[in-house]
Length: 429
Ligand SMILES: [Zn+2]
Image 1: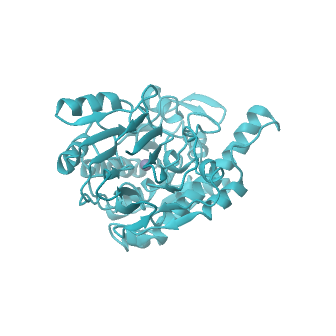
Image 2 (image 1 turned 90 degrees about the vertical axis):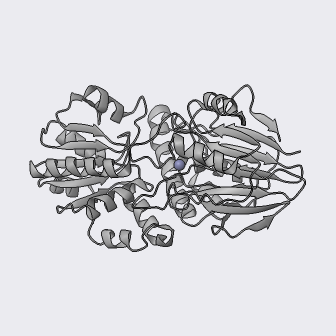
Image 3 (image 1 turned 135 degrees about the vertical axis):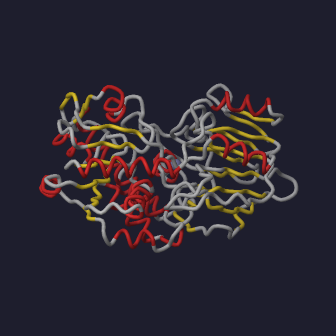
């Protein structure tokens, strides 16, 4: 019998983690953080020692608490696809920095960090690189990584324990359409009896990329032609690179700037360009984009019409706030969000009420505000198509706001499906 303990992202998004205990080995799949709190909330800590971590991708909600699992398990390997170690390194150091700043603001000097830069260094030493479709044996399982099409290095992970145990596939986060940055996920996976699937958009399909790209270009063009600044708040990892490709390949002939953590993330991604849809596309665009450094430079570039891709995606930090504090009253400028805005985010307030609340300000904004959908997650129909294709014996729905409802819906379609939750988070399979 194998046991699955769902340690986070159960009926919510954040702190993804699952313990897979086959009786002979104990694997951790992801160990993320939930940024609703400072410091971020980690998954439930497993009671027993574990043998390895398998990391699906370098988003904070999947990797953000890694030092908290490697520290109590000295020497354990952390397996991931290329690009993931470098991006994880960037996110973990940033997390330590934020914790020092914000916890210091709240508590003065009297606080202890959940993990330190030294812990991050030790964690990074544990990384072992895995190539897609190159299965390897670890303990009692054959492990195989498949491209999940979500961000560069994102993986679906398959565990084959031989004839006497169920074969498991963990999807991590995945995407079923091509974008300018990445090809869609590799759905040609081996026989799977137990599917653990993300369910972020189990109730919704996304508009086509084509339509969203056209809208983005319309807004940027109109803004620039009226003399304004087209601000594009962006998530650092993957999204910024895709937006850069869209602006360039759709012919925006004005200066395009990149700022904040997006610069480093996009540089790391470009250094791993064999993972990309078009190996040379991003490096060509990177030759043209201008990186912004420091407030003096920021003040200079907003004197003339331009487009700025900058973190953070929900305006909760990063240089976007510098730009907004200068431009909130400028009718000719625009803010285009390209993804979901969390309920208490600065971006959500701007989107819903037209108020900019940041940098110590609480003001009515005159900039044009629009939200588009460049989601890197599979939509509802894509999840259903994948489930039908692999036809598993059991499905566990995680990483969504309403996974129990989705599991019930799948049960109604004839599948055996579960939405792990706080009352029932451990299963034998
Ligand atoms: Zn993700």
